[in-house]
Image (tube, rainbow, N blue to C red; front, side, top):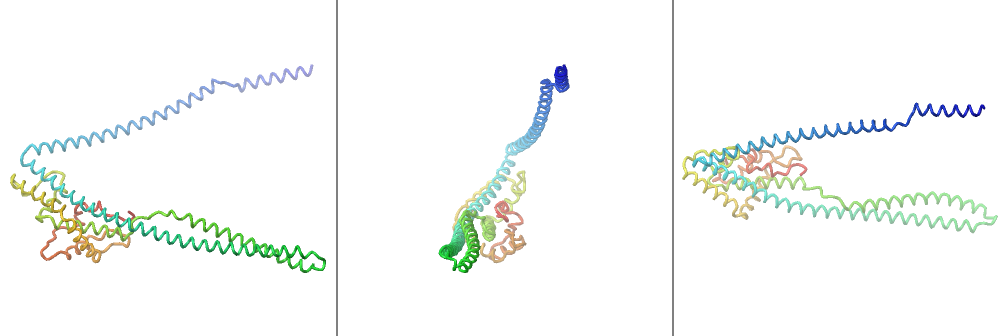
Length: 356
């Protein structure tokens, strides 16, 4: 009777526990529903943010398109009138002359940079191989010395063990004691020799793995020389422009976003200026050998006369460049420009800065 009551009580407790802690799949579905809802809200928020970003970009693009359309309309209106159309043509021809000078300087400096980098890279690899060979030789010598010492200690230890094995008679007690003491000392020496050998082998492995060092780039002196070549080429091209007032027109055209040509009031003057621009462009492109000779002479003069603000600067000071270039002019030549201060031919885009 008691056992039946106990069984009934246990069943009741189990039923109560099941009622209090039911396995309710509805709760799991509700929990998953809330999780999915949170994930959907986050995805919606991200989509709305992306939509706002795209709308902002579309507005910026529309504004840029409107500005370009306005510029095109202004250009069309200028080209529709004879004189303003000629002035627009002159404006863009002057800007093209500036671009031609920039391209010529970039080509010359780029070729010099490739030559200088190739030479420095080969020198770097030669120095690296020589230093690596010297370190490898030193590491191999240290490894061989450590192997020789270890082998010598190992041979001495074997000899001691052999002598100890022979000295087993009772009257050789003191000999055995001396040999045992020597053997213990030799084992310690053997451990030290083995450790030294392992260190030498590890050092040799590290040295052999250092062969893949990377070329660090152009040296400071190389970057300075390239910048001086750019300055010298800009000076030579400016001196070759004829008439000299043409450079002032080119510089003025680069400072204006709208065509405006001073001193040209009729079609004949416009065509005459177009012919001057064409002759100047042709003169800049011809006689590259003569230009290179003049550039090398100016580079030597600049290297001896310019100054740098800090030891790591690659571009010289404006004052030192202007003074040196004026001093290098012939008596018949007049310089009415400042190469660096006016950023002639957009030189600043071609300079090699620190770390390039």
